[in-house]
Image 1: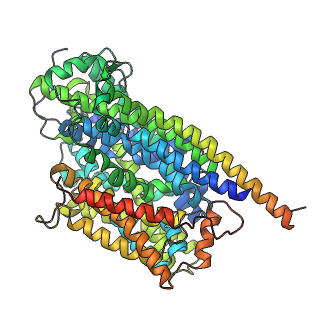
Image 2: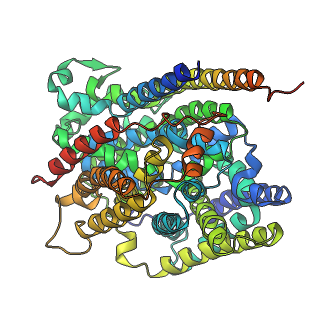
Image 3: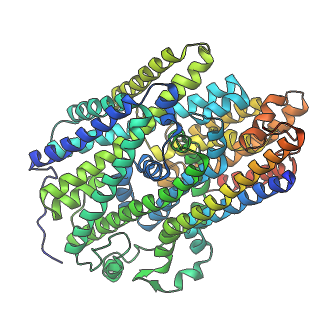
Length: 94
Length: 544
């Protein structure tokens, strides 16, 4: 059980590092793939200007919501696994 | 666009309105600080606000601590110079707190740390703590110095008095309430200051945009798209990305990994009432900071547009936010913007000084005098806080060029010296104390040497890229990670491996109640990281 949770912690951390970095560095994608800059306009702005602003603001906030839910759940699962271990080894309370 | 009158001197003429508005604001800061002082009875209260700040207040405080005077003054100046690439540079600052929380903030919160050095001490021992704490204090002093100089300049514009007098007034007023409030006062003040910043940044620039002809004045951060065509007519290259991919990639080591080790940002995560509350605070942080930052891009946009359409060259680009208000708005509106700028400087300065106090009063003093009684520790903490402020104030009168060159450059220094030790220390049991000391010292010194500020003939990169530490950082930051990993493996083989207690700490701070040797103990992935880092460092050495 704990081995599984440990692997989950690793995967969750790596996935959120990637998602956060993509949101904050979206502009780099427009530089790496210049063809994306010609995709047109959004709300009057060139797409390569407004999209990085939106991902760096709302994108980050959305990822933060998902991260809070997933990581808080993971903490609860680790806590439950700890309690189960304690109970099994007789360390638990009454 | 309505006709405008451009004053010859950008100084407020209606000084008394500004004095009243700013006076009321500072009276509120002092009141909140006073309430904070009443609640400060232990070092936990002084350095970590008793670990009880809720998610919304903490989200506001996180954003406020991060959004420095540069958000009001420096960003728009650099957007005037670099245009859209600097907007991209600024967007990624929002990564700092989310990454701190994800990678080590909640883990260190479990051990009730005051600064990342609390962890460094438990994980690597005293000598490594001294090294990392000294680097952090140097960067914090540079940071605080920048805020104090900016506050002095703002008061200089406001009253038209000499810089030295402006500095003295602002320094004494600001440091006074900080010392009174400790971290509890600082946290609630920072939350309040963020509200002031958002209002004073967004509302007045909406008015300016309306006068400039934008129909999106009702929501300045995102609704000025109707001015795109007008902008392209006067500055056809405004939206160009201008730099190659390496320039954008270099933002990651210098400006993403640097702030990850900033102790005053980490302290905001530590003050949370719980781990869950810290994670929810990040959501509020992203929303509030995004709102404020997006408004600063509008100021940069408006500044460029103003210069291009009027032909007026703004001689002090750092003051563009204030100057636009003095030109377009009534004096009392400009006074509110000055109040916002002051709030921005004060909140960050507060965080800087709290971090210096915690580093000296808790981390270093804990090494020098580990048996000091708690009451005396609290007193010494207050003294350290005041001393940090006074040192920064004295330096600001005649600052050494090296210290004021660029706060942004200092982020690269921090990433070269402290970030690898913190991140690898939390996630890798084999991270070695001696390897940390050696890699931190070597890469810190190399970063300083190859900057444009020391030996002019040994510089990696050129122009603003080198001045901001981006080109140097692309060499030394990955090198620091690689060196740290390689030396750790070598030193561990030589019999200097981390102790069982140091390794157990990792399992504990990640929430496990048992110890397993195979957790956070691989060799394959650190070696892969070291190889990739060496390749990136080599890439950074190629001509810019």
